[in-house]
Length: 398
Image 1 (cartoon, one colour):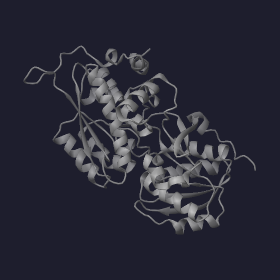
Image 2: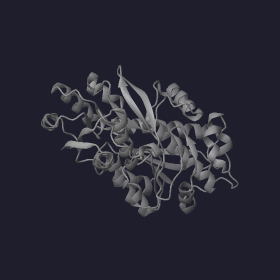
Image 3: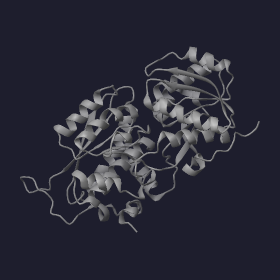
Image 4: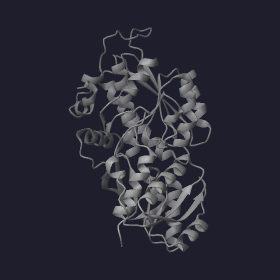
């Protein structure tokens, strides 16, 4: 059995150093004789309208780096995290990733949360042969950019199927409307995958409307949706617009459930929507209630450091850094083809968000969890496995 298959269990037992500490090679040293750091890049939306995503991912990543270094580093060398802010702006991800590679000489890049920004950066990493690991970009096109591009989250093809199953089986909805963000690859892709699976399960899409990132008035689209009399509305967008959509839907007298994907997950969602999203649902990658040893240790450490429980984005940031460190250890080197190949060969890596196996397309096969908003809090509802999501039961009758 592979040694790295047990990293999560050892982490839970406080044995991180047994996994990551020293390799068989002498460590490169700086002028003062200290081990030379391994430079790891991170790009994230630390400011701007999706800052909640970037800050959450960064907190998880930073916690992992600190744990690794406290245990002695990797191959006897500390990890040095270099973080660049893309300010949630189109085009900035390409600029900061070029800087990380050419000026900072990083051996790998962690990021981004939003699929559109990962798609900006991926060609640059691929051309430079620098591995890039996205914590939570779910659009399938991200890893299609080349053999140096990886992710530790599920894909939207699975998430769309899981949400279609949830709509049919849990919400018992046969008539659904879709309101998607035409300017966001994440939203466009997730809407398409949901539609395909929902129709295959004998559901009906009774209305489909679009908006663009940054819009603030959705009343025209919601009025058209209301006229179609759906039993639920699927909103595969990001939290800023979703919060406003929920408010305006309730103002228009729309009372049916709203549901969406992992783009909803941020504390700001409730700050924007108030009680308008009470009792509604979204899918994501992790919930603090998950009972695995690794997950609970992560929750405890994260809460102690930051004063609040982690969300799924934080858990995936944490896992992306730990998986990279595990790959460096297995490669016996912190650069080049050996590191890329070690990431690609990851099997049954146990992290906070569950087991991660990197498949031949450099994607992770994982379950989804469903969350509801209750009393202003995010609450776990259920887990949907890949096997369950792909079952094609018809919609339940009335």
